[in-house]
Image 1: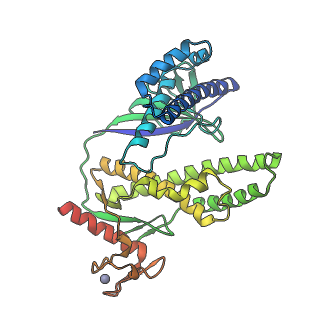
Image 2: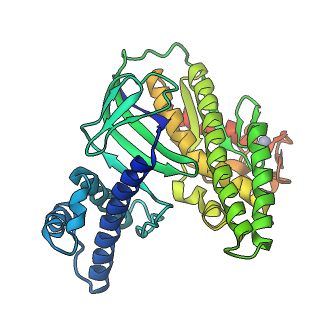
Length: 381
Ligand SMILES: [Zn+2]
């Protein structure tokens, strides 16, 4: 079977390279924003929007024009990839199955700096050759196996990174286990399992979240745009980066552990947009929800959940297992012992006590068991 994996490394830059990256990212952002503006104007006039092939035709004209001729400095495929992303973003917006997808947004300088090469990237030991830029060294923390399908260069708080998407050929998997497990997204924990385990995030993540809440309170008190305000804002950006990495690491370890010992993982089938509803305000506009530390924790874990689902899915696939999504309604109000459903049974945030049979259990563990039972019913059907 063929699988796609991602590998990310920090690039070794010089001022000259940083300028080249900023130019490439800037031109790509310019093309995205210009095409987005054009389509929003068309929507306003009730005209059909322009899709990828039309936009590529326009891009050719822009590059030949006096006004936008500077775009020729960028690699053409990099610009086309942004148009492809925009095409996809609009398709998602109009997709009736994804009602929560929002209209694409304008990209901001410094915040959304990234560009992608769909081909033509080579690696030679500790260097990567990027089209139109040339050889760039990177901090190689592990080998990159397989064939490089694409490479993305992204600006983060502490510098530029390259991520490679590679295709690897693996032997077809045979699952060595028939074990099934149900997982519930907990209220206070990251997840609860049908085996009774409560999974909490690692301490490093908790500490970083506490620190983030403190820094955000500090930022809210400081004079906007002052030297100290800028310093605090910079520290917050670096901390966000650290939190994202710690969370990523935590999710990788957890999903590896689960996918190695279980063939089927049952999860609630929730639309992704639903789960991140609380995250939008807090993460994108820190400051607005400064005091709600628990809200912030929740938001950061919620944002991790869909990533966790994707990791579980591909890891299970590689081991010959699978994720089984089950209908979500009522899982938290159903008794895992007798099957009786009653909101009254959820006596408190964390406690489930069945009003019919008296079965008592941690509410999230009970829900995880119900999720597992629903998966068994689904698989037997
Ligand atoms: Zn019961």
